[in-house]
Image 1: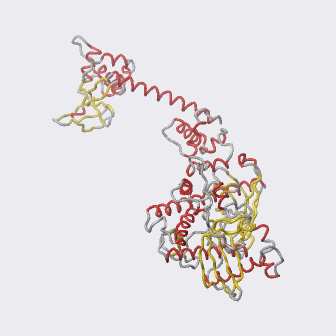
Image 2 (image 1 turned 180 degrees about the vertical axis):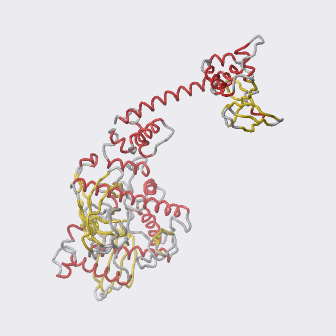
Image 3 (image 1 turned 60 degrees about the vertical axis):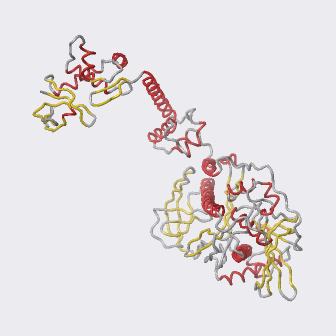
Length: 634
């Protein structure tokens, strides 16, 4: 006696040796003995031999038409053996073992037509369910054909027509359930290329610059960068006009001029120093459409050759401290002695006459370490700049910390050409040492303003957002904690309200504090905490994007200038700072060298899509005594 049984989802045959009520001892055609459950047995038969049954049954099952079999079946649940008798035998004739087994295999291999109801038991699918299932199978068949076609086109470096409307999704947020994504993944696997590289070869990525930019915009500006705010803030009226001649100090490309300075002599005392901060908080109300826009963006986004401002251009134009007009400002006046001691301070909300916008490239040749040592030439604001620089030195000394950013380098990227055709643009990268007298002047006075106003807000118990550093960690907080890196008791970002939302928020609080009004944000305000959290995350992401785009243009410069060899400085391990570029590169082939040692590298490969640079160590050149200062303050 032989048996046909089911085990682990498969049909098997064996010779029966012995049995009990619940189990059977069997021997397979290979001679292996096993114990099986009696409930798993589907047929008991005498012939053919176990090794022949399934082969003969499979051959016969291949001749059975599934649709006809479905039509022959009744609507009720049935056992396969009974159905086999009706299908093959009829009129009292029973089906043979091979025929019954063939019908079982046919039923089991057609789950769309026949639903399994138990071991050896089935029920045919209702007509409407069968129709839907067959439509689904046809859809899958056609989809498989489409995927196969798209894979072929991609491998021939042709872009399938289905790809064009969803390129961004395929590049940045692929949906693995879509056939286009499946085709792209299959083509990548067969070609050995990444999705961006394969799509680039198919002509889908015309600009590596736009590839990186669109990834960022999709995440942070999904509705585009246009400011959908029609009503711009009006300039506030009724403000007192300050009796000062203020001037700003910025890079040539700066349009959001947040800060300016003024200096007046106080006979017998010293000077009255004015630090004037643009006041968009006077024209932008919390909860207004402009606030909603600024709250969504949280900061201006910077990148070489372009920027996305936090506020729309019209709002910036209304409040930037442009020369030749009276500008709304929040001013901090310092009473400074002839020994550059600060004896008093006063905060005001007022109109400030701005008479000049000084630019670094114009002033630094006239105002630097050498000209200060040799004696300044006669140029506009020479005396004011020298006095403010002397005050900055005194402030730095009192803090007991080195001037912010001293020893680091600034890099200016000039993109020549139209960024809408970035692939044909040229890039020029210039380098300047930070920590110049102008840098120190601006940085120290900003520290004074932000720490003084932070102290005022804390003293008046007005909620604000502070930037603190304790235990070596810099973070945003609503508590007026110390900033150890700057050596100040508290530090509230307030000096850049045109380009940072935290500064705008703090300015609202400061204006209310100065005017004796109720601040908009109460202590422990949910909105305050939410703004803090979102700003910190977004500001970090914007900075990472800026670094990425700077790296892109550095790689473009290397390719543009056909650089094959470059010198660099070891920072730590095998990380190298390439000369005259803000580019840190890991060089695995470099030997173990000390920080500061100079090396020559060979440029081996540049990938503008992955922003990868491959460098090979060539030789060690010597040492440099330059140090890197990581502290950065604004």
